[in-house]
Length: 304
Image (cartoon, rainbow, N blue to C red; front, side, top):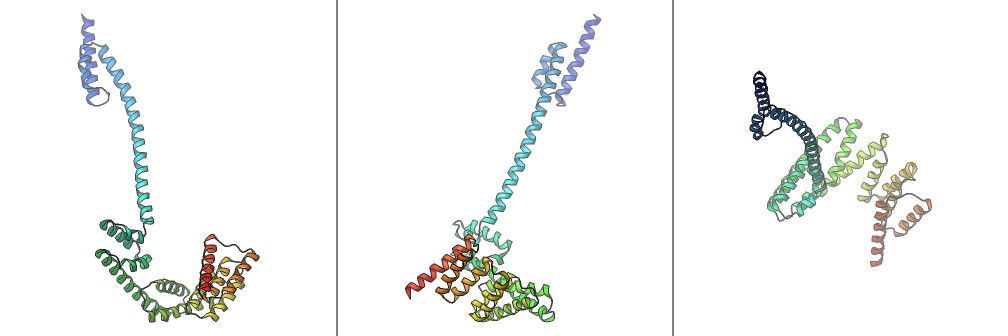
């Protein structure tokens, strides 16, 4: 009798343990199994504990793996989404934004671009003013007006500071860089453009005079002089480039550009032959540019 009572007590304790384990989620068992545990003395609770521990351990391990995989997948997906968005913003140019048929999407893309750095898209903003979307035209016109105002303020600031410190090399370089960008914008009046182009040449000359004239500075000087049709001075600086960078493709490309600006077809052919004889390396892009110039000269010569 005492043995039976003892076993019943053990059984009840086992039932309580199983119930508590299920309630506290320590044992991964359904509550449906509780009647079975209660009706099968001793062995019911023992089996329930063993099975519960087994399933709890397996499930937790599986959950951990699933969680890690889920986190990795989520992280990967989030990274992919962010990267796609970043790439999308980089890939979608202003021109492509203007070609999108959906007005709402087009406006959002336009605003995204403008919030980035509208000065990079001055040319496209000018085209956007001709768009058939009234809001796009408004955005473009407003942006150009703002850029123009900013340029004017910066220009006045540089002029004032340069008058006070004409020998400040850091200021000289910054002023030159600003004018370079300013002259490439297409909303400057012709008279203002010519004045600032002349000042730009002066700044380039100052950099050369103080020993800060690198290859890019000389090339900018030659290009600007060619634009203003100052061929004799451009030829002088072309000679200076030859002295220091005579084996570079930049020098030979600039030489062809010089003759192209004067429509001297014979000298262009002669220069190209020199390049081939001297075995000067030319990038694919520069080769295509030279071929384009030569083809253009051929067409012009044919029509004369």
